[in-house]
Image (cartoon, rainbow, N blue to C red; front, side, top):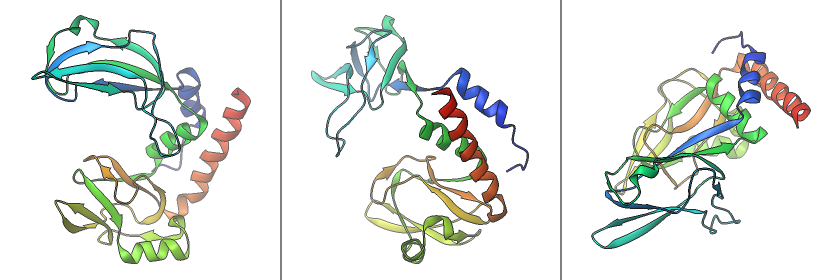
Length: 218
C-alpha cells in the first residue's frame, strides 16, 4: 500500500461515474424470458430480514421447470442481451447489466478495498473467526486486533468439516470485515481487509476526505 495516494484522481473517478456495474448471468442452462428491458428501474432485496424480493429480472425454464430470478441490488438496466429472448442459454451466460448508484458508504468501502490488503476466501464456504481472534474482537474491536502471516485467524466450514485458515499477507490490524459468520462466501470474495498499523492515519485521511468531498457534491 503506497503512502502516496492521489485523492483527486480517486475522487474524480467516482464523481464522474458514481456507479457500480453489476453483470447478471444465467443461473443454469435453460430457455430465457426477460421480464425487464433496457432503462427499467430495478429494486433490490429489502426489508429488515431481507425478506422482500427484488424486481423480477428474467425467467429461465429447464425441463418444464421455470424459475424467476430477482434483482439483488437497486439501479437501472443499462444493457440487456434482448436477442437472447426465448433462446436456450448456458449456465453463466451474461444476460444484462445493472447500473447501481453508489452511496457514500459504498464508495468509501470500494476505495478501501483498493488500499487495504484484502484476504480472500479460499473456497466457497461458511466462515467464522477462530476462537482466539473472536475473543480478542469481543474484548476490544476488530481494528485493535493485529494479525501476522501464519496466524490461524479464520475457520472455514465446508461439507460439515471445519478447517483452520492461516493468514498470509501484510502484518497489520483487521480494519474491515466482509463476511458474516455462518453465511456462505464465494471463492475469491474478500473476508477481511488488513491495514499496517503505521498506515491507519492514511486510511482515516481517505475516509475523512471522501466524506467531506461527497457531502459537498450532495
